[in-house]
Amino acid sequence: MGRALTTVQGHRAGSTPAAEPSPRPAGASRAGSAAGTPRFLASALSRPAVSPVARAGVVQRYTKETTTAGEAAVGEGKQTAYLGPQQLYAAPGLIGGANAKLQASGKQGSSIELRAAGGSLSVAGNSLTRVEPHFLPKPGSPHAACEGANAPGGQDSEGKSGGPMAVWSDCGRASAAVTGSSGRGDRSVVYKDNGVVKLGKGISDPSVSSWVNTTPNRMANQVYMDLMPGFIQRKDNEAFLVEGVHYDLEGHIGTGAVAGAVVGAAIGAKVGALPGAVIGGVIGGVVGGVAGSQVKSKVIRKPATIAEAKIMYLALGDAGMDKFDKEAGINAYANPDVGESYSMATEGDMPGFHVEPGTDAWTFHWAGVVMKDGSDNITLENYAVTGTYAASKGVASSSDFINREWNFGMYGTTRKEQTFHDQHLKSGTHGSHATSIAVRTDK
Image (cartoon, rainbow, N blue to C red; front, top):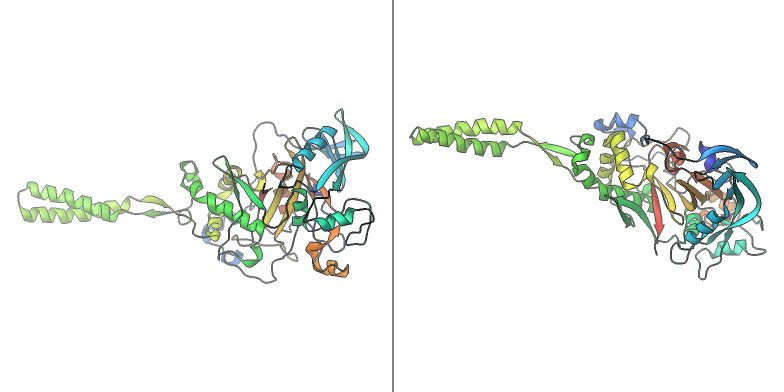
């Protein structure tokens, strides 16, 4: 369906599409950059960073349809219709169910409540009503400034009152409001290890460059470091492994020599002479050593650093990366529940990382999921303004900026080109390599 379905409002004054601070420093160099790409990765890096997702059988997904209100992206269950940045229609029952899940997120529940507004349309015989988000006051809320901006007579950072809901422009804080999070260490990455759901706060080490040492990056790091050792040790993944990256071949010269010496000594002893045994042992040792050196076994490596784990990931090739992603539930397979978030971490340290000429890569993006229609996810997300623009409005930090230019977004989970991962990676604002994850607020 293309980028339009996320309706990135990045071209308005002072804003940045699908991105958050901080950008990669101009001219910054990193180990493993394109200029120093390891030889074994040369062919892999000529392919897309994330492989196409193949699905067999019937493919379910949102569709582009003409409704009574105009052209829309219609969810798989025909219970939602997305027409534009702040134009979402949904079945009343879906709205109620979404609110129940939103209020179950985190410790205090979401600061966002979805309400039926004026206007309706019909899709496949289903009557859908327009959805309008409202900001809920919460005792001791970390989002009190947004509550004030939404109160009667309250103003956002643009000095505007009334109209659409006001929320943080910073994507991370906006998603925190959606998911009942403070945005201060109370969220965990959600991933799978052999089908078992695991949660983690993220990890880092000295191999990680400072500009990509953010919360989403650290969360992605944990997935690679935790799962890669087990993935490459499994027999069913042998075809993806590369010598010198995932394993080393170890000869058995010593073992062969000892075994050969024993056999040779036995042969020499049979002729009844001690010198014969010695000579036979020496000859047997030499022959056994040669034979042993030709018999090699794979010794699986274990990544010592995050950088090594990600090199191992890329070296798996398209099919191997796709299998890893599917099992872990990341990238095209990231599928957060209502009240959870998507997050994309720019992988600036991955070998071959590059940005298009004249552009720069931003570090991350967040999007809170407010509703599901079958296999399709609907998000409420926003995009940070620049520090310069925030300052021009009297706001010291862009992370404290509040506006009314949030967007709904619709993402599929069964076709690669409709996923959050593919849509945002293709925007170019995260460079050539990024990791998408699901994130849950702690209870």
